[in-house]
Length: 66
Image (tube, rainbow, N blue to C red; front, top):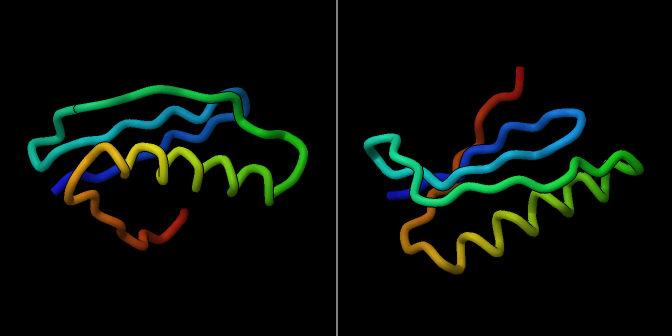
C-alpha cells in the first residue's frame, strides 16, 4: 500500500507518496493558499486526487491532528 504525507508550512505544502518501507516514490510542493480555508482544503484534495490516479493501492487514513 502507498500513502500520501503532507508537510504544511506557511509558504509551501510539501507532499510525498511513500511505500510500506517509507521510501518516497513521488514528491513535490505547491504554494500554501493564504486566502481561505476552503482554498487550502481544495488544494490538498487536488494534490491527493491527482497523485492517487497514478498509484494503485493509495491508502487513506484519518489521523488526529495535534
